[in-house]
Amino acid sequence: MSQVGSAPAFRTGSPKKHELKSKQKLEKKLSFYTKVKDAVTSLNATKTICKKSKQRSRQKKLKAYDLSMLSEFLPETDASNLHTEAKLNCKSKQALVQREAAQLNAVLTNPQFQLDPFAAIHQHLLSTQPPSARKESNSAKQGKDPKDKKRKKNKKKNASSASEAMDI
Image (cartoon, rainbow, N blue to C red; front, side, top):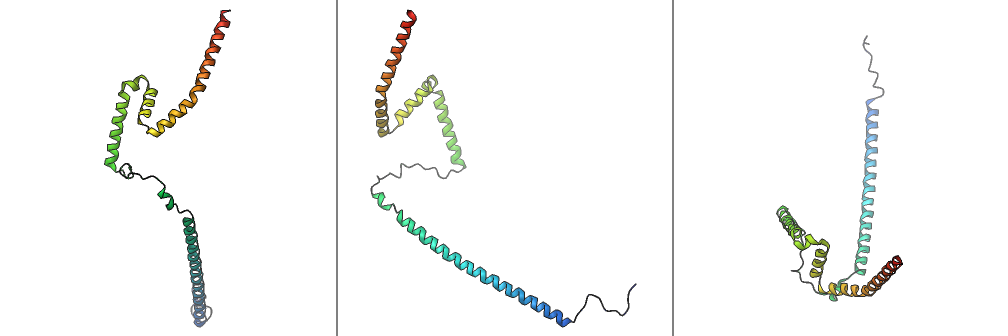
């Protein structure tokens, strides 16, 4: 059922109108793209202005918090005493684990630790604390001693009175 001699139904209008419409579409697209490009450039410009103002405010804050003058009053530290293990590779991690395992084994086999672990730990801490920390802990203990003595005396009195009451 084909029709002979008839023109195709989908071609309505002349080819010049079709070319005109395609040119108009192209112009619309180009104008849209230029508008988008202008918008992007203006946004980038405002972004850079905001970044610069933020950087200025950060610099002002940093100037306000400049603590370099305080370094004169701080005591000098010896850099060789500082032990930092910031970078641990596989070999150093294994060595560290082995040393710690050996140390743990030595602690667990220590006869004093086996008898009384808390006393052994306390003695170790007392022997390894720096002298200034020892003085502070001793002064703190001395401040608590009179109260402890009073409490012990009160407990003894209460215990003796209770035993007397049971005797009667």
